[in-house]
Image 1 (cartoon, one colour):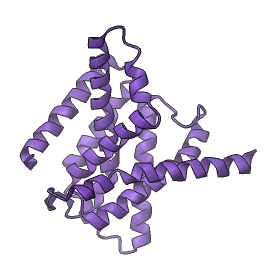
Image 2 (image 1 turned 135 degrees about the horizontal axis):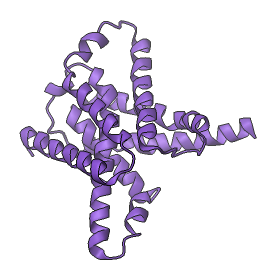
Image 3 (image 1 turned 180 degrees about the vertical axis):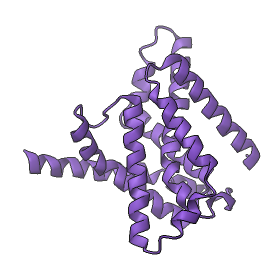
Length: 219
């Protein structure tokens, strides 16, 4: 698929997500998150200039990780959900064990394979779809409540589009600080794209260990 077609597909998916959120979702905060993502992406050529002024590598890593984590908090707040714990403060503390390693692994992959913004967007989104289908099975559970096959298909498709766009956007936001990603070639070996699913798997393993540690500390 050419880069122009991929851009067009991405625009269609984002517009579809905006439409689905506006018409069907009671949580309108998702529109704010998408607007913020589009605004940051629109100004993507300015962020690397700021980021390159930071000479300390550790500082740049901290900013990258905090940007991703704060984006995740904002997304959860926009959706009105606490995926890890019903109490907000506890949820954010527990969520650290997932989001920080998730974005750390992504930063390593970006440095290693020079993924473009669109590649990060789709690998992040499809990784989340894979996670919700095979591990948490949330994607299949939501669709199963439909009363007929057509409704099941429409609900499933809508969920796929929304999850792909939201988590793809979340994964991409901190990467917009990095220079030169937009001009990298996007036709990479299949093995590199498959490795792009590793961050969500590895972050899940770290998250399991993190929750065990928290239970030991606060038990």
